[in-house]
Length: 100
Image (cartoon, rainbow, N blue to C red; front, side):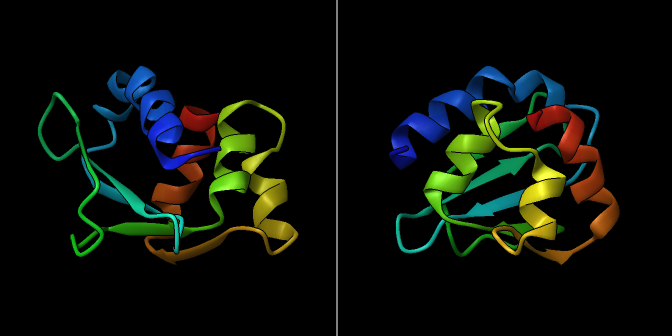
């Protein structure tokens, strides 16, 4: 899935991030990164790959697309090594319900 399509899919779920209260980065290098800043509602999206995040999820754009489409469970992606998490793991666990 192209990074622009991923951004659109995340934008559709943006209100669900409002309760998170944190900054999350979806790093799909080399295709790019999308940052969701939900520190103050409404949550905002950017493609600032240098932004600091409370939790960074590293995966390919394909894997993130599969998660957003419901084809791949985020926990399964993590357990199979397709998804790597840096930072606060409790945020990543909350994201499973937002993304799923």
